[in-house]
Structures are given as structure tokens and as C-alpha cells.
Length: 289
Ligand code: NAP
Image 1 (cartoon, rainbow, N blue to C red):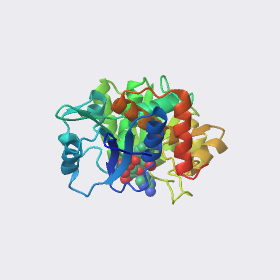
Image 2: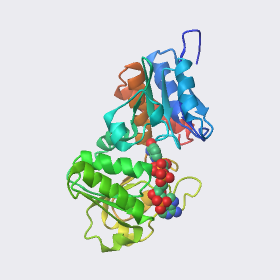
Image 3: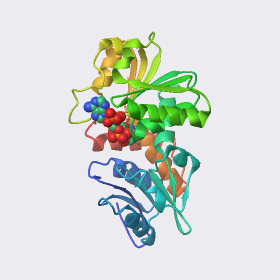
Image 4: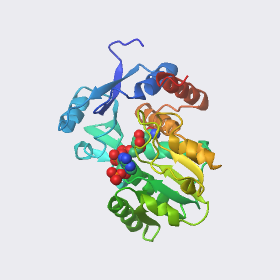
């Protein structure tokens, strides 16, 4: 990558950031699109998010991604916030405006684009969400907005799942979502769920774990979508497949959240050929190719 006096900078702020795959995505896109743009990681110390946003703006950065643990903490420091990001309560992309940054959430549109590409539909589905953290909450809102027939959130700490279910029901004005503890899967009827795995369980290096082990659970799942992308096949995915279901990982979600962010920063349109190339570079950076 060549840089000169005109090079624009984008980057990701988080803590830690050393594991990020985003430079592989954005630097591939920039190079292929002929943009004079470089993308770098910024580790931001705890308690300094406001300074980081202000500094990024003062240094004329074109845009930023925001990752764990700052996706909510960054919100008070924005000039504007996109309505979807506001509803979700999490921002992962900052776009430069006159006088400050506007915050977007491209994680959920990214997940939705990935699901569409994988031919996994939400509309009319009974959606089972495993986990009740920040991402699970966003997934519950996405499922509600995309026409899920029913949303069931299972979490180790059921109270957190209950809070999300109530939020979804308030947002939609109907009793769409409900919450239970993880073990409650046993009382679910039939094999008919789209399960979205939104816990950390099974993530590298603890790849031998799944949040639910029992085959009786996986028999109720027709499609399993694990948001984890490392390893490429999680234990959750292999258990879904073992019971005859389809299974996907979170790699394409990661790819598309990046592509949507890049399109917001530069106005470029990323076509299928370049999407494939960026996907390849990302997988190469992860040692999957
Ligand atoms: P988070 O807020 O920390 O939530 C973690 C969730 O996992 C909580 O529901 C927690 O349950 C549950 N959990 C953790 N350890 C558990 C255990 N041993 N047994 C049962 N449940 C356990 O995390 P997050 O930010 O929502 O992220 C969730 C996942 O999404 C992560 O795996 C992350 O890699 C993935 N992700 C993927 C992408 C992508 O682009 N593909 C983007 C963002 C995140 P409690 O509530 O009981 O603690």
C-alpha cells in the first residue's frame, strides 16, 4: 500500500484490537477500488472513548469502526445517530460529517445481507436466539423488523433475556418475543426453529464447547447460524449438521458489515467480484486459505 499527502485514514477503535480482520477487508477494497485510503487499528484505553472520537475528527479521519467494548459507550460523542443504530443502542461505524461523526450500525444489515446470500430467511420463522448480550439484543430487533413469527431468547442468565424480550415487545407493540433459561429448550415443540447462536461459547481457543450439548436440542433446529467466525466451523455448527440441519458461521456477517461501512465512507459500490476478493483476503488473514 502506497501512501502520500492525500491519503485518507480510516480505522477501528476498540480494546483489544490486535485480532481484527477489518484491515484485510478495507485495505483490499481500497486497493481494488483505486482509493487513496489506508485502514489501521487503534487501541483505545478504557475511559478515553470521547477523546478518541474527538481526536479522530480533529485528525481528519474519514471514518471509523468501533468494536468491543465501545459500541454503546461511543454514542454520547456523536453528532448524529442513524435510527437503526439508535434503536439497537450500538454503533460500529462512524461516518464523517461537517462538525462531527454520524454513527451507524452495519452489524445487523451485514448479518441480514449474509443471511440472504446464504438463503436463510427470517420472515415467518420461529427464531431462537442463544444469548442475551449486546449482539443478541441487536439480533432480536433485526428478527422483529424482518418479520419473524416468534422470537424466543434463551440465556444462561434468563433475566437479561427477559429484558430484551420486553424491549422487543414494546418496540413492536405485540407479544412477539419471550425469554427462558438455556435448559428450557427441552419443552419446545417440534423441529422448526432458526437458531442464531449469539453467545461467546465455542469461540477460539475454547473450540470444543457449545452452549447446549444435548442432541435433543439440535433436533429442533432446521438452520443454525453461529455469529462466531473463529473457528470457521464451531461445535454448535457441527451439532446442528449432525442432526440434519443447515449451519453457517459469522464470517459473512463480518465481511458485509465491513462492506456496508466502506460504502458509507467512500460512496463506492462494492460489486460481487470485489466482495469475493475481500472475503478471500479476510479468510487468508485468518489462516483459513
Ligand atoms: P456479550 O455482550 O459479552 O454477551 C455474551 C453472551 O454469551 C451472554 O448472553 C452470556 O450469557 C453468554 N455466555 C458467555 N459465556 C457463557 C457460558 N459459558 N455459558 C452460557 N452462556 C454464556 O457478547 P456480544 O458482544 O453480544 O457477542 C456475542 C457473540 O457475537 C461473540 O461470540 C462474538 O464473536 C459474536 N460477534 C460476531 C460478529 C460478526 O461479525 N460475525 C460481530 C460481533 C459479535 P450471560 O448473559 O449469562 O452472561
